[in-house]
Image 1 (cartoon, rainbow, N blue to C red):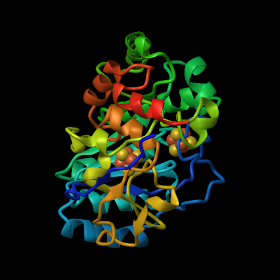
Image 2 (cartoon, rainbow, N blue to C red; image 1 turned 180 degrees about the vertical axis):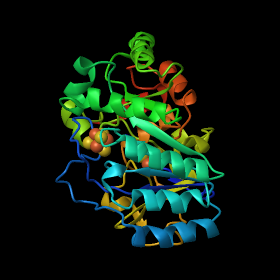
Image 3 (cartoon, helix red, strand yellow; image 1 turned 30 degrees about the vertical axis):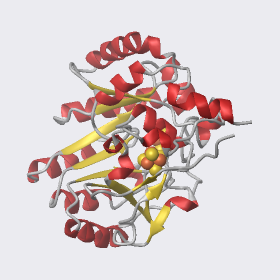
Length: 317
Ligand code: SF4
Ligand code: SF4
């Protein structure tokens, strides 16, 4: 049997910096959450302004070009507006939110920050179905109505939020899913929505809800030959939490993904040893704001393991 060897991916440049501003804390407890966020998960805590500021300063020295804010739910962090204001002074920002904690007052503050900056402020809203019947079993009772209300407020505030949904249906149903969802969004005044479909990351709660990875689902050194490494988030980004700097938001709660306390510490490569890396490898551009490429890659994929994994599937016990 061939021995598996995991590829080492160097950090080429630090273009993108993520902040895990809500740690693993969230007002929801979605059944597919790949880092199992909930109101009780204190594995990673809120990133307060005082902890955030030195990393932002350091990021400017490293030439970071854009910033993302995630959790957990970013709007449970009482410092989020101060954090965004500081960020928008140096670069564009995107906030990933479940939109259930938005209010007209908060959207107005976001609009003020956006209008005061030369950089863009984007919102990405996670909704996993086009109705309460399709969304709420995954994200919780009443979450569809709350999130759609949040989207409506954002649209009224002049934002064009990117609606992201994790594919929990057969890939052949993408078109009908998107058509249904566009119709629902049109009803609340969002006429030409930006939408992004994401593959499931079969770790955390999602491994319980559906299933985990198969034994053969890894990335190997051989698979990287001729592969475009720039498709992987970790080739040019890192994520900061209250516990330090980690390789990527997908693995942020994995002890071996913490690279140090500062960005200087984290300017090193990483060996792609986790099974979740195989999802990045197959779909690419998972975490960027791109609404087309990730989806097209996903459409070209299938439920079967990719051909490059077949030999490892055969080789493993
Ligand atoms: S998927 Fe998002 S909204 Fe749901 S529990 Fe996880 S962080 Fe919270
Ligand atoms: S999960 Fe994806 S982004 Fe994270 S280290 Fe693996 S390949 Fe890179």
